[in-house]
Length: 125
Image (spheres, rainbow, N blue to C red):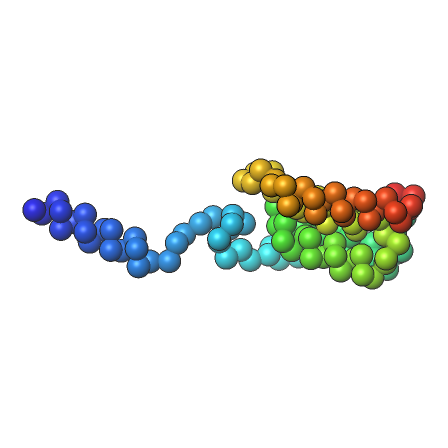
């Protein structure tokens, strides 16, 4: 009887407590790393010099597994420089969460659209 009461108490706690997950995993509230925690990236492209720092920040986020933030910043770079094919490449790369998510058909199609958009631009990089 005592074991049953303990089981019910533990089950109730698990049901009513918010779920815990490691940062960056689906369902977890992830905070983006502070800028000084990202490190430095040197990634020369044929995009405008004004958009280069944005691309490098997005790439640093991508390599830090901060896919959602990375995709958003690559999207911002694409808006700042519509001829920047690397921004579309980055958006496609940010869709692939290789550590915990096998890409589904919709994700692959979105990535293909981003790559096709980058190819249309005809940029040097």
